[in-house]
Amino acid sequence: MADDCFAHPRLAAVYDPLHSGRADLDAYLGMAEEFGARRVLDIGCGTGVFALLLAGRGIEVVGVDPARASLDVARAKPGGERVRWIHGDATGLPPLRADLATMTGNVAQAVVDPHAWRETLRGAREALRPGGRLVFETRDPARRGWAEWTREQSYFVTEVPGAGTVEYWVEVTEVSGPLVTFRQSYAFAADGQVLTSDSTLRFRERAEVERDLLAHGYVVEEVRDAPDRPGRELVFVARRP
Image (cartoon, rainbow, N blue to C red; front, side, top):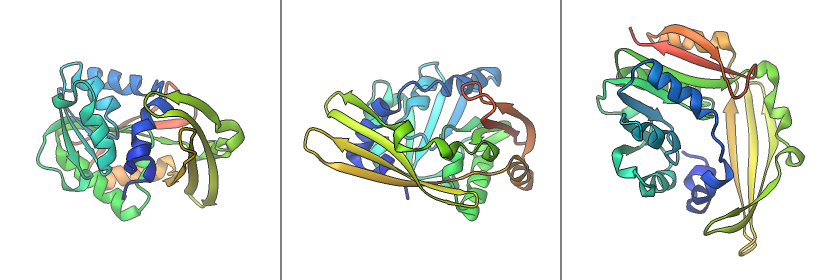
């Protein structure tokens, strides 16, 4: 099940304007070039920002996401016809023989159920050609990034074309071990409607992620720092032998 921030049509329509400035994607674009990827699987592609950047560079892209509303936004964008969009997740993909599979942003952490996580790693591996790589990021739990997810630190107001003025903020509602649950709120000035979306992320330790990758047949080539958030995130580069 996709969270409402991706699955609700009204929230999917304002996702990009509220989350602009995706500097985190620069590193992934660089790795696609570094690894010579010509076919990329974008797991949890959402509204298609990264997939369309890749397609604009002449790369064959498959974007998969469980949120149909987000895929509708992605398909409607200029160049949307250049990407193969799949409604679903990484556990039931057709044979792809991709050079690179990615999970950008919160995608890896959003897979909180241990069984679903194992199946995601398995599905991604099966979608890769031998020698292909899986790349994803996860926040370093030692940095306790969720402590900054407060209304005071996250609140902003923006004007969204076609939607009017939208107020947005985030608040943590529960921390239970490695699981952090938070609520995103959206207030639409046009009609006064306030919508919320609850999400949970799993903060995995580096050693845990490395064990999971090895257990599913990957070679962990490298764990990099995230250039846009130095010292705060771990970027895993794993290869299918």
